[in-house]
Image (tube, rainbow over all chains, first blue to last red):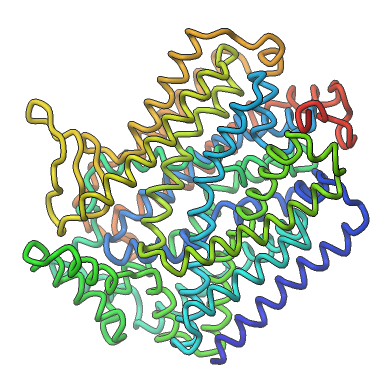
Length: 536
Length: 90
């Protein structure tokens, strides 16, 4: 419980930061101040807060859990591809978005799309798809909060209570502090979880008696030796994952955050240091996730390993229900916390747990972004701002923050999938395919609102299609997937143990390519905007 | 950015993206860097450092400062509450 007490102290600090930000901004009542911190963030806060906004529970808990079962491939899948793709997006698209936002006063991406493509209701359709895809991302944060507090307290704090507590704290500082509070809290949190990696490596490494002997022991056994290679993931899947970081520029919380910098030159540090920050956060998590396979003296880790072995050996003979039961036992998002519990002294485990908590609570930016896009793209656009005033808009934004958090919490209590799967399959893939919209709007004068509509509807249908497909065909046991559709001996659509494969690729690849193709074809066939194209 | 410079950066970015698909280390668990890092992990750590260096080069040689210069010529000045009103509410 000492470590849980340290985490409670941490939650108190972030709550105070949010309320302090509220006091600083009190009285302005302006939407730009609440939703964008008055476009005033300095380079240091901008870099750290951007990182905190982008890295979620997924970066620490999801990555270590994925690495526990799949090995070192996790780092190359998400981290190193993001280290290249995300700063490139910030350099080319983020800076341009910032300049247009500052010049024309945009607060949300849809405001830019409406002006750029001279459209109204099509912007609302884009808003609806953005909002629907953002919700799973918010749920991840609540799930991570519940799992973390429960694990840190050794199960004394139940999952439902941990999730509720984290949801209330996040909701409170977003409610009061808006973007300023969120940015300050994110800066503090990012510093914590940057320090977390180094500390966790030192403490757990020395506790395990050094990594050299642990790695040699893993290599000595064929099933665990494979974890130190990338054999568990096919190369086409590895290539597919490089599409996922495209989501960064399409996520409303990231694109909105691009507008908060006081000067465009503040992007410089972010662009240059982003790859190193990603390395510093992901490398310890992935490496320790793999090393967890050596911690067989931790009963809950041993249970997960045993469940994995049973699924691999007997999966084909088991019913889908029994396989799901084993998968639930295998869920490994808590391995990092279990390692800390085993190897770190109590007070240090608490501090490191607070570091993990920092990453878990990154859902604050998504909650604020959802509130921002609703109040700007729907509430204000359809006239309520003019009728009720700007203060009412900010109040509506705050009420929306509460509604979204309560909804996310209710879903998190029922959600069956691991954090990693949920994030990848829906939010990340959908947003990666939606990246076509900002890129076309910023860099292709020939793009039109009808092209944007076609891309958006395609992304929405594809995400729904994948969800329906995976629900209708239960996941097969580890090994070859179930082929649902093949043409001339080529497997086109396959239900794999982890999700869906389209001609060997993850669904994100065809989703993104077809989205781009639709933008090109439909734009080429439809009338171009007159004034909007002069904007870029 | 001049045309040769654009081509140089496009080439460097494409080359680094290609280097990300290091199928040549796919099944290798040895040699271990520092005695404990397998090649598939070590290589991608170096890849992240290479990405940082490329970003530094990009920022130094091709920073789009013209975008910042254009900011002031908007219908509403930055920070003005009326700025962009036509897009935010109609």
